[in-house]
Image (cartoon, rainbow, N blue to C red; front, side, top):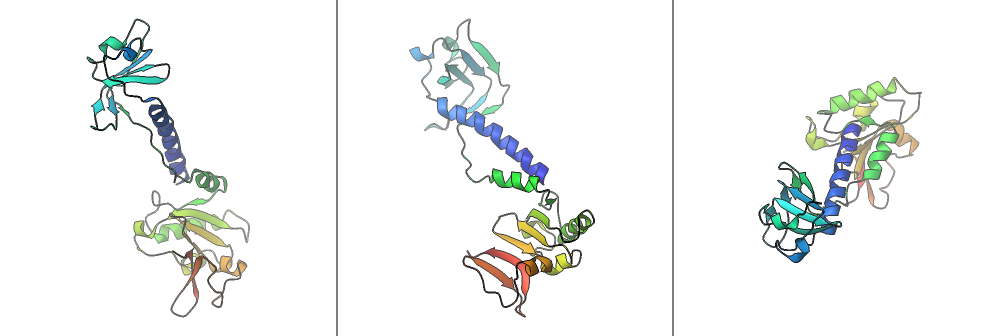
Length: 228
């Protein structure tokens, strides 16, 4: 899962850089305009999503001094070039305008990777049994009492279609505190050892803004979540 997050981060970063450049320099001057002359760069055979009022898809783009002079067909922009114009053939690749994703949690991904968390995301995991097995394997590689951390599980992607419980984790890790964060970041499951360290019992009241989930008998299930 960490590998997946890092891969997605790199893809997002590269796409954002390219998209930001497009958004910053696009001015959309019409072909044939005097401003189109002497372009220092011509991009051709592309799929250029202009996002203009007519949702045009252009194939050629002329650029000078870091600003887009015009977009259109190759024929329309034939007068934009000179012997000094560099030409890039994108061979059908797509150019997009600026995209903004303000909810990537890139710093969180880095934290998960640096802490050596076990990979329990739905890209790698298909059942609670698999998650429990990864927790069990980790217990054999760390000192007694050390924390086991993981993040990314999603009950909707698991064969059991339910939350993980502290009983699931206690069965393989009675002596190591376990904390497994949900994919959304708004809830987590912990085992009895972790609850004990946090001094959470059946008598513990919900904290402000949070919920300590309890079963029918009033015992904590191990699920800790936002109050939404």
